Amino acid sequence: MKLFADDAVVVVTGGGRGLGAAVAEGFAAEGVEVLVTFNNDSRSAKQTVDRVCDAGGRASAHHLDISDESSVRTFFRYVRHDHGRLDALVNNAGVTKDGLVMAMSSASFREVISVNLVGTFLCCREALRIMANQRRGVIVNISSGITVRGGWGQANYVASKGGIVAFSQALALEAGQYGVRVNTVSPGFIATDMSKMLPLELIGREIPIGRLATADEVASAIVFVASDRASYVTGTDLLVDGAGSVAGLPPDAIRGKARRVPRGKRSTITEDA
Image 1: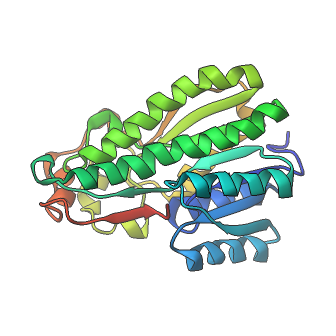
Image 2: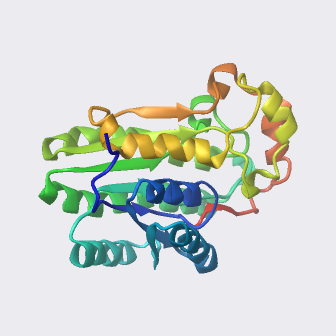
């Protein structure tokens, strides 16, 4: 059984690097045409597209600021007019701006909510308008395993990702009547360039499976959830964290990141938003 139709089109936001790039390449390997979006990092997006095309796949890079309503509308208008269909949307783009709550500015809190949660809403709304007319489609929103256990120095990020799970469950109720499925995938710690600031050896020891996930492992779960093989899966949050959320993490491992951002002034882009 094929995972996707031969002419399927998928949008992956923040697909230039890290998990987003692995997701884009995972879809392309299944014969899907992938539209990779970027906001600031056009070079990484082009590199992802080049890898896909070099491997015989189909992909293209497109600018999209998910926090800007006009940018989102313009992009999905392009998808509708130039491609005529949208089979799946993976909302992967996001940011972090870590710091302890007592030292966090309201601007830092709002920025993360605006990009991660409001950006997800904007993309879902425009994608659903296309998919509802088709009477088919899948939306996969990327949350985080951190919503299960909380995150030291990441109150804004946890709020945004927890909101994505709740939003997606509500959207699944609305979208089902149009034949559209909506799920979230919540990864744990992933071994990427962006995770090098974490005490990886300590965290890896505390995860029951004994190591961090690779981006490809998480991407495989996302591709599956978006595929026809998961045709009865909707309104669900899939944890892909090696049982880390069940075991919990030692305080020193969790605090290791927060100690580097004691005043909430560091902004780290986790995926190009």
